[in-house]
Length: 185
Figure 1 (spheres, helix red, strand yellow):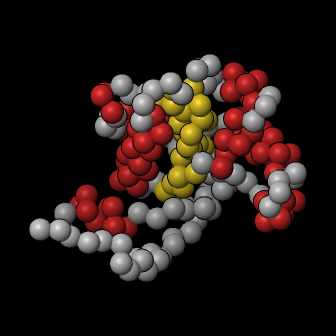
Figure 2 (tube, rainbow, N blue to C red):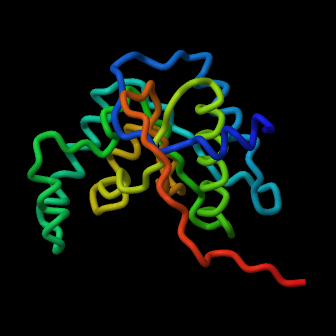
């Protein structure tokens, strides 16, 4: 089987990681793959924040938990009450993907970049988890201070993050949902 197709079929979201750091060389190559993702009209409306300091990720987690404590949904409040809850799933690093808020197709373009990076990471023997829930505190009132600390440009909105590391779990594929494809012609 073609190696790219095999990689796409085998990639899974991993939610448990070793504490082992990801090399700077691998991170630079992964981000480069994000930068080369397709974007509408080649605008490239993204900004990547590579966080390898776990204390910074923990600060985001703590801010999220404060907001989640008052969520209307019981399951969200329960997650916030769990001392082991971690928006970043214990990964030693994450790439935050923010997009210009005044550009057309920014969310789709940022999704393309995130997916490119997830596939690149898998090809390098790393695991990842593509998340959006980390950005609750950054997009909430008062989140501007934390965004500034993270170096996210003022006119950008955090959209996704890619947790990265060496997985300690190897999830099996879930059965694919039936009835999701039709062909015409």
